[in-house]
Length: 620
Image 1: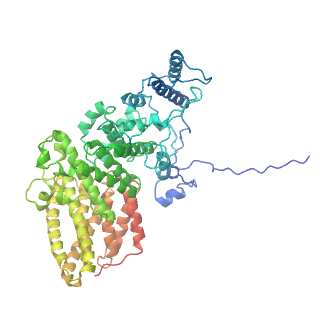
Image 2: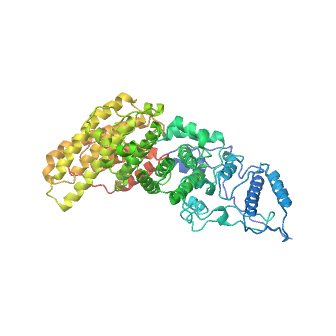
Image 3: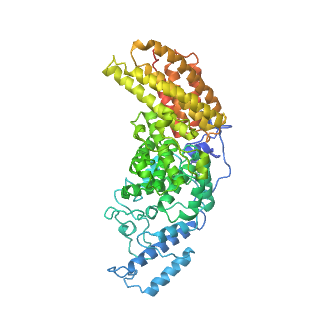
């Protein structure tokens, strides 16, 4: 009998291990040496980790989780037995179970889970939250991560399974009754009551009861909290560190708004490192779902400041770490909450007298407003979106110095209008100075847009000249005073100092580009400002060299906005500046470098590349 030769199927996977960059991007690695093709094209170091964790959960975890679900289900079912009008439970054989049998079954399930059974109320009260938060924490770092950082599509599918998701038309049950316990299926209305039929009273809705909490060990929570104050506090200094830790020891499980804020803080902190990538999607899902629940059921007269802060951090995460366009949409919800909470009227004399908050609580509210205010200006600078917060109607003082904020002491600061007019010589904190510069930059952009409109509607109008001179006077004064004081207070390579200086120089560039759309009669003014704009571009180019001396997580995350403005100037004004080509290449490379840890920088770099072939030189 002739032997039959069976063709050998080629291996589906190549021999060897894929590098970490290809694994994180879910790409097929060619396993080239010393650098694979993907890492070579991206310009990153090719790292292969030979010590991989085994796939799947740890041994015994699935069985333990099933036992806990059965225990929770039994406790919920047992609570319905005592409600009036509830039918008697029946077993699989159709007979009624006695209370002794129920107690015996519950005891067996409890023993199987190895946990002490906590009585759970049907309305998802504190006992329910305590049960979920008190379970044995799962070591998520030991699980294989199957969720990439770019989880947009998968995350939308996951969020549809939660009742708090706006895309979900009807809530689905979180758990199903196992056959070994009962044939009855838990009703979704029992786990998730109709919140629309009962308006939520202040602090009465437990969002955590409808969002499964992310299990973190105390050490992981402490690590994420420290990362927030080390990396995220630079651009979101809205929380007093000492007060936060004091509250965390008491209010983590009793105050739902504070717990929501903690999730938002840890979500943003997890995105600013590499060791918490596995739990980042879960933190985002929980935070966004909880905020959705609060947004649907929160009365106007009782908006916890923690919810506003959590929404602000969620918007910052979306802009800087996920999808900037989706983040700007989330920022719009934050601006709405700022208006509802009247954070722009904190120091209004008519309301300040009746305020019973401590000084540190008031300062936290001020800083929350000003961070949202800056975000509103960033959206205007990047996408030219209309401003939501009017700078001429603000009755909230500028942020206090960091020293006063840490000491939780009282200090009287200036209003924005007084600081810009320089009616007093009171020193401002670097954070307050950045608010002044951002305001001037936004006004320069509004002036440029108005010049474009006047060129079409009223070409003979001379109103632009008065606006230009007024803005130039304010900008010149601020550069002399603010930048001088910043240089004295901060190190030369301090990220905040570089950020403020770049914004000030970018304002000069925006003010110059406004002159390109005016009538030809202003040639003398145009030529005079041209030299000043070229000098500003050279300064930004020199400051770009200092960014390489900082860690990628130390650079202020909104620095790419100033880089983009300067790159657009050097691209469109090549005939005006002999060094424009070199400056454009260096600034573009800096944006590409920051894009690995900053989604906003990546978006601006991509837009810069798209505009490179369509540049039109400014008249020279």
